[in-house]
Image (cartoon, rainbow, N blue to C red; front, side):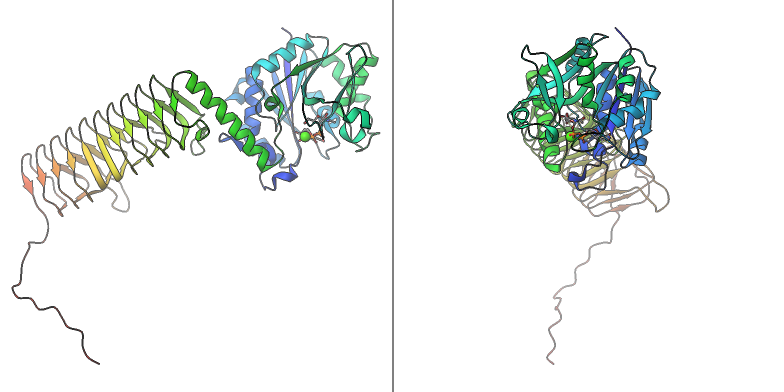
Length: 475
Ligand code: UD1
Ligand code: CA
């Protein structure tokens, strides 16, 4: 294998996106387009990657520098192209940064779905000495560079849409914008480019005719899957690629045995908050209903069921757990976990540090943050558990909350095993409710309670006999 360097073109404006965000930083599956392309570079084990920036260069370079994942595996450099005089001119800016040996692969920052195997095949076709073009046959090739072949089928040149004759425009085989080229030939060819064409640009694609003239073999590696070379130019195209990408992930999961109610209503994404890479890992017989969104790393155990319209990020759901519809789980950096056979939702919210044991029940409109609930604990309705340690089999009543924040610091509430907290209680932390104890409904508990006790802390009930309600006064 010859050494591999990669040039990623990312200087273009992307006018049709109608966005303040540079095009290559638009997100697909929660991940900037450029990061998808950097992932491709990583899968090729590139030695060096040079990203050509222009429009939005500062933002694009900052995103590269974050090196989320892939970027860490190779030497990543950015070079600015100002002004932008065409794709040939773009590549020319990168050449001085390359070692001059091995193979160079040219990619576009706005083509996110190329598969690693395709790029590997392209590099193989180049084989250290040939110019290899990735091409595809399109039913409507309008706008693309056409692959012009001689009578014997050998590739002669690429002609751009605006320079093509009527006959050439009828050619359906187009250049994808991706090529593999021997590094030692690239520099000299680029030096010979002119901008004598319909757009007054330096076309990278003109090196094809130069290769033919120099007797360097040109090979077209033609694929049939147009998605792999589809670029993003507009919000509509971005959405199309998003759906196609999600469908691929859905199909892969279904092939592993996951039951998706509708693969067209299913999303797995990078997590925007933490930057965690999308990774949904499912055991056998997992069922996922429509409209769920999984972000970052999510693990789901055997036989677990995820109801419709749940958003689940950075969490693990153990075997047999049932997550009812419209539940929101976001573990952020800390993570969140749901124990075996637990039942959560509908309309529940689990936040970072929520750790539910086996058979825990969390019902509608219950929020849990940074709290451990031991096996069999239940909070079934309208409640808040923050910074709490909850023992086994605790029953936490409707409308009860832990007052965990005094305005400056957060404090812990400990609810020991087998406690029964009535409805509408306020447990003012730091406080401990002793094992087996009961807290009467409506109590505001500010002091620790002894095990086995009944604690009631509220105004005593009084009743005034024959009470007359005020009457409306005549004016
Ligand atoms: C290019 C190809 C065309 C191919 C098509 C595939 C040329 C001359 N034509 O056409 O044969 O079918 O891609 O999509 O190469 N860019 C820069 N600097 C520049 C110009 C462009 O970095 O000065 C970047 C763009 O941001 C983009 C990529 O290069 O990522 C392609 O540029 P674009 O203008 O879209 O090329 P096309 O005219 O579509
Ligand atoms: Ca284009």
